[in-house]
Image (cartoon, rainbow, N blue to C red; front, side):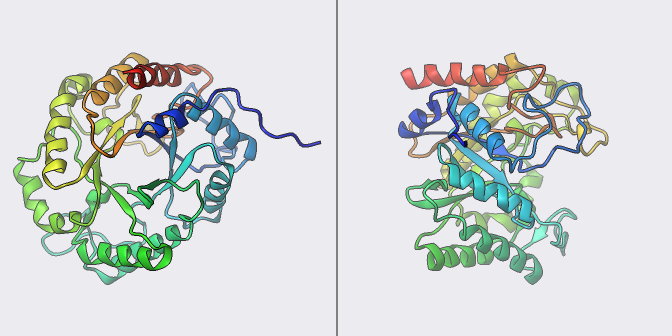
Length: 347
């Protein structure tokens, strides 16, 4: 006899959502069953398949029980497996689901006057691939559990800073969404550089000439992994929390001056030697540092119409950024998240 999933925790995330506070987390749609963990820790649920219904119910229960109310699913929808994970999460309810596309491996990088990592959307192939991805996403935005902002389906473009000359492509995407769903998408651009880059830096302003016009068509700016860069000097990484307020203020002002919202990013740590390898200085995992970073960022939240703080990530055990309960750390990060958010909603 099949019985419905019975929640363990009250849906605290829903309370925050009803109070206009978005607490999102990036969700990796992975099958980890045959992938050995490279570190000592690992998921409390074991090496799971993210398409498993019980795993998804557990994730929704744990996440929303501690304040998370949106899962950003990292996917370009190129994989039937990832599509299946998204469809199942959308069907369950209890949490909003948004799709988080990014640069695609089929895209060509570089171009005249551009860095070798840039993706020029004036290149027809690059533009067509991005439009194709967005068209697929548009087909998944009608369910009531898809994350919308004032009725507009939200899309977080991860590493949007790689896209150059975006205006015409973004305009086509907006018009396509209008035709398909009746409303334009709410576009969140992952374009804020990591610490210590500032808006006044000469190189950033050189690149701005290729990107500023396209940003007219997005709604919010954000960064990644609490604005950490593994290429930074150890002294900067060790003192991330000291740099954080100045960085947030400068880039929040940059966004506000352009009429955009600012989406905060917080992370418990980062170490890509568990996945990609290569020279780097990791951001050590620390519950206390996570609490400090979260408290700093919430102090900047303000009273804007759109308020989102994003946790990077829910379950990326490859780059060691997870807050999902694990064998060694248990619920440490989720307990901190709920503690801080509870004090916020009471105020």
